Image (cartoon, rainbow, N blue to C red; front, side):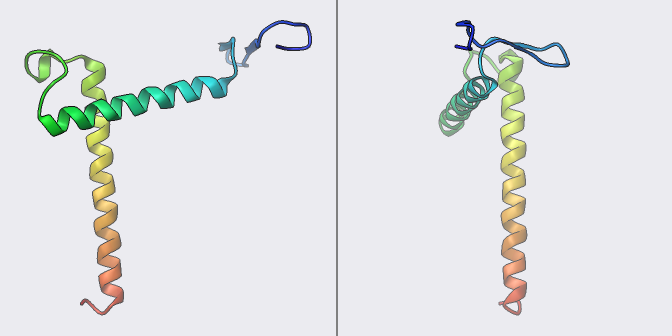
Length: 94
């Protein structure tokens, strides 16, 4: 509540309107992302899709999420490989 007894209200310069603290919005987005990741891990482990049918029968949001997760996994693998190579070079190639 603000000083006038009203709830949180804010309008940004770009015209975005918030009726609650933006931190709460970010927290909700993080929770949603964690659920998507959890679902992805389960589905990937059991090699199943969330909806019946093939890849093209899945929701665009799911497919986009899978692409982002796979790209991030590949970047993490590459970073780990580079770090391992650098560590090995530092040891004289052992």
